[in-house]
Image (cartoon, rainbow, N blue to C red):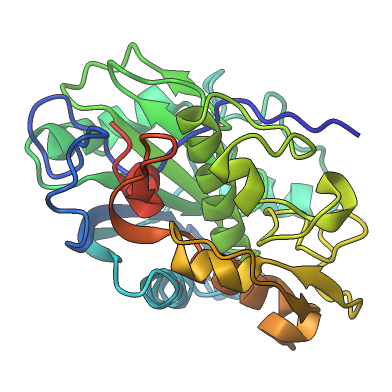
Length: 330
């Protein structure tokens, strides 16, 4: 079955005028240098309930600070230190984001919806231009103090997994806000503290897929015509197995099949030596990345195989360090 992927693309801030996040395909001098991504976090975590405690605690969800640290550590480890996030600003917000039609939950109305006593508001989407203006995000971006914004919230807060703001904004699996008056283009990542670090890595994996699809001019999992398609091959969709994709590990039989014990022959380990591929294969299964959190461990295993060699590929003219595309695509 054909499975095409559109242009979701990217992560981090994309500068128009000389920030460290600018790169062209022929700029390979700093390929091996770590990529530092400075992050502002807006944690929408209103005080609710009889004990007046943060929403994530009242509902028994994950602590967003611990989630952030786990995510930072996972990305740093999996990338071999190539990507180094720095949280430079953190704000805990005692309130809910305003929706695009002006509606805003109160603590009581949100908990009433969660208990089923009221219906969730529609439209659900948060007002992104209002949000970045209210919290002076664009100013921090333009002052070159921050490269990327993360927003944390609970279910029905109306966050995209990712959205792009500014003059070069385009679709990255969320809103496109090219009318936001910023000098630099930047990305806003939406994270849900009801879910775990695995889902945060999952979002990053989708951004990686989207970025590389953009770099290579498209992606169909059954058409192994580019290095990216060959890397992301899985047996079910591609007929041969390599490292796999976000939803389909190399041995998967369905979406999200991260704990499948089926063994398949895969070229995954050969990709650790990219661009010097030898055709070497080995047998892999879910125990290759291990449990008990097979989802999170697969994401880490997947990123650990993402090419990061210096130089430009003689075959297709693309950078051999794909992390440069994911974290600093333009």
